[in-house]
Amino acid sequence: FFFFFFFWGGGGGGGGGGGVVAESGPRAASVSSILNDDQIREVEAYGDDDASLYHHRYHHHHHHHDRRRTICELFRPYRMRVAVVSASSAMFVMLIIMGATSLAMNRQYGYGLTTVSLVIQLHVCAMFIPCFFTGEILAFLGKVNTMVLGCLFFVISVLSGFTGAKISNFLFSLIALGMGWNFLFIGSTRLLVEGLTHDEQSRVEGVNEVFVQGFGAAGALASGFLVAQSWHTVLFCAIPIIVVNLGMLIALKIQRCGQTLMVDIPELAGARITDGEEDDGDDDHEDADAADAAAAAPTARESKTSSHSDSHS
Image 1 (tube, one colour):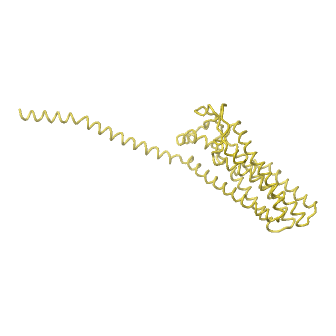
Image 2 (cartoon, one colour; image 1 turned 90 degrees about the vertical axis):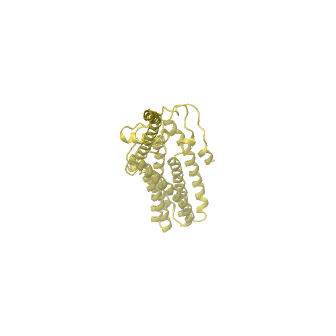
């Protein structure tokens, strides 16, 4: 069901959409000289956390003006898929551990409901209190780095759960879990809508919510079955999801570094273009020399003939 919605290519029809880069300056000119229109749109949608390279939204007036981009086209950039996976995994990991914590503390380790309630309350506070400064963290670290920070908080949460069953372990684990969810979920939703029009934002957010709520429900349902085995079983099930998410973020970071290098050093592509132009110029000169030689050949023969006639006469 989820993969059907994820790879479904619906959403054709009319409506204005798309755009071109509205950046000015030599850097934008160098980008335009290297990339075609589709690549410029993809790089702009990719976003730039560090230098804020593409400031303005685009308003497309080229050959894509007659149709909206399909869902498959919107999710073609790798960053879009990373954003959906990150938001879904953030909700899944948070709910599978939070839902199992109260049962594990009360049923397996014998803590009272007052203690369990305190742990859950502090967890909820850790989820939403950072919202007051998450925007500043996003501006300072960037979206991808903030999401990596969220995954690291998830790792701390799991490790704290493995180290013991004291109330301090549960408190530290659930507080780290709440902060990790905040950074990863907000960063992923911010990354999802980067560089899209309002119409496209609504469409990708709808697809994203299908995944987020679906995996959230799966995590809430799975927590009861897993905690029936043991508390550590819940933590073990969260590890591969965190590892996969962290690996995708690292791959995205590497991709971003490659695109930043291409934008920041346009002379590399310019040198290739210049070499090609020089080669074309050399070929043109060679063709011109050959044409001149061919044109001069009859004249040379005529002059040689006339010289032989003069010698005979």
